[in-house]
Length: 333
Image (cartoon, rainbow, N blue to C red; front, side, top):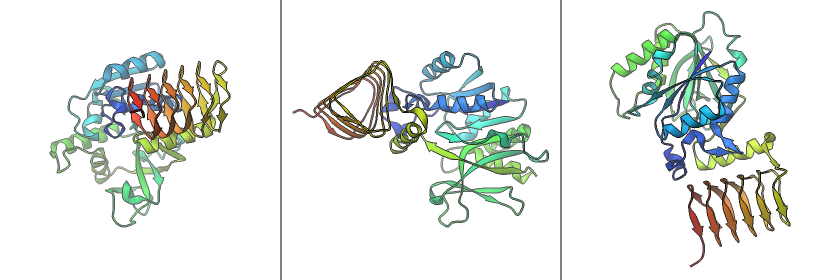
């Protein structure tokens, strides 16, 4: 089975980190979010992927090539970022069978076995998360048979609590691209984007049955606060630990934490919910609910709710910070 994975976005909600790091390669619990997503797809039977690339495409392609050399990959450059339908449209030359579409803004825990259980008459699956804050999402309305009827963006009333999370399986790929072309031909709306959900609506209006499937877990990586929440979840689910080459001397460790290879910690307190990237040195600091990139140096500081890129230097600072690679952060006058 094939998958389409749009990765062209600039990740504006994670700036300044994403000025130098593609959104999908931002580290969480010791590795890029994209790594968790690709592992799940491969386990689910996907062996060929079409990546829609744009911002920092060379970094994305190099990382995938290094870490997933066994994958059959295609890369398509999205010159104009005109929405989700525009992105998926670019994959059409490579799609000649059933396909998964995965938006890599989140780590999703789902059962891909639902694909094999889909009725032969149905055209696809749309994974849906039941939420209470329905007004933040596009929600799925279903008909009397349980199939998708339409998607309503950010409703003001609780017409549905089934949130669209950006993960789809489409068996009828020909009708999908027919719907995408119809959406693109209709012209840009007030938002200035073409939405893939409009193509799904076209499919439904032309007799397709797209069935909502349950989501076991949804962990957003697209915003600072949710990235830190996702780090916490992953640490609790097995990604925590102290590497055997790390040197922790006189520090209080409050689990869960992840301390990677060749990290040096002298005194202070680390945790809970902290990842320290490989080769980092932390001297006399308190670090809580933070992601610290590889090769960073922290001294005499107190960090909470922070995201630091690689090779960041922090001295005499107290508070929260989000800084990109090679930054210097100091609290001294």
